[in-house]
Image 1 (tube, rainbow, N blue to C red):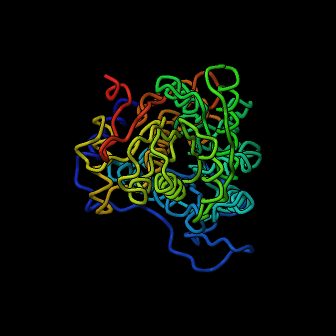
Image 2 (cartoon, helix red, strand yellow):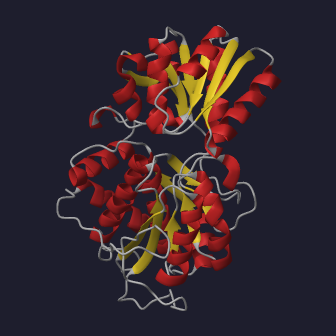
Image 3 (cartoon, rainbow, N blue to C red):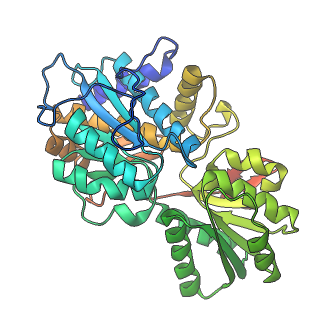
Length: 411
C-alpha cells in the first residue's frame, strides 16, 4: 500500500498543477476571541468522532505566521502544504478520502499558537497537524496535541522540542543542532581563530549561538572576541558591528531571521569586513541574496537545503519535482526553504495515515515510528523515538552569487 501511494504521489508531481485545487473550508474574516483569524469557518464539535465515514474528508491542521515579522516565511510553509494536499487529492486522496485543510494565522507568537492549536483539536477535530516553522510555537503547543493523541509534524529546527520524550510530535526537517556542528567544522576548516558573534533575541538564535559557544570552548582552536545581540526587525546594526570589528575577528557568526540576516551581512561588508561570514539555515532564505546582493559572497552556512535561483539548479530529482510543481501552481519559486520542510511534513502525515489504514492518532504515530519516508530532505527514519528523522546537514558557500557545496569549493 505504501508503495502504491508513493507511486501515486510521484505521478501527481509529474502532472501539471494547473487543474489542481486544495479542498479547504471557506475564508473567514471574523476574528476569534483573540486577534487571530482562521481561514476556515467550518467548526466541528469538540466531541466530534474524527474516525469519520469513508465519504467524509480527512481533516488536517496547519498553523503558522501569516502576519507579523515572520510572515513571508510562514506563507511559504502554508503554500507548500496546500500544494502537497492538492497533489494528494488529485491522486485520489488518503484512504480513498480527500484531505480538508484547516489553517490559522498565529501571528508568530507562542500565545496565539496555543489558542489556534486548541481550536484545531477541540473545535475543528483535526486528526493531525503540520506545525509552525517557529520552534517556540511548536513547543508551546505540544501539551495540547500530546494530551489529545494528535500527531504533530513540526517544521521548526531548534533542538528544544525533540529528544525530550514527546510521543506524538515529530520533525519534518533537520535538527539545527546538526547545522551548528556542521558550521563549526566549516569554521575550523577555513582557519577561523578569532570569532565575533551576533544573534537575534529569539529562542532559536540564542540556542544555536549557545551551542556554537560550547563547541568553540571545547575545541580550543579559536576564541570568541565579541558577542552582540540584535532585535528581530531592526534596520540599523551599526553599534553592534562597530564593536565586533574593533575586536578584529577573522570570522563572524550571524544568526537571525531570514528577513534580518541579509541586512546584517550587507552592513558588515559596507563597514569594511571582508572575511568569511558563518551561519546556519536562515542564510538559505532567498532574501539573503535579494538584500545583500554582491555582499553575500563568502557567506558559509550549514543547512539541509536551500532554494536555488532556477529549477534546473536543484540538487536532486525530488527537489526539482517539487520546485516544478510549486512554480506551476504559484508562478514563482518559494522564497524560503521552509516550503521544503512543510511539504515533507504534509507528505509524511499523508503516507502515515495511508499506512496505518486509520485516522486514529495512536495508529498514525505507530506508522511513523515503524516506517521510513522519502522526502526532499532525504529518507526520514523516526524509529529511535526521538522525534528526529534525519541526522545530517550540508555546508555551503556563496561564490560569485552562486550557492555551492563547500566541499566542491575546497576541491
